[in-house]
Image 1 (tube, rainbow, N blue to C red):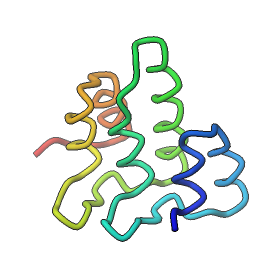
Image 2 (cartoon, rainbow, N blue to C red):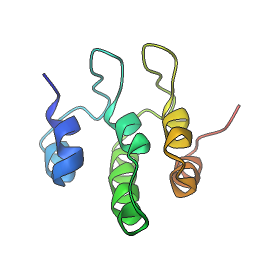
Image 3 (cartoon, one colour):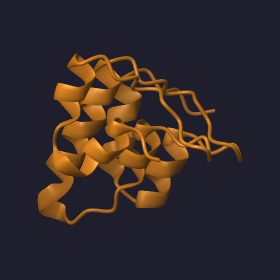
Length: 99
């Protein structure tokens, strides 16, 4: 079963759940966190600000930038998969250092 935070990514209730104490670093059985899922969202141009708002909310609430899933993919890798340069810039502005 998915964590409520994962479900909130598509329903816009993320901030409310975080304020209610849900763990922003929860990982599903594949080791994928809400931050990774948000970074991987493929959206059209008009929805990029909404995607960035979700990612910023997670980062502002201590989502782990350096976490990796069960096969070693990080939030940065998911951002690269999505092709959204703004996502990569946002991760960097929150302290991500590319290696």
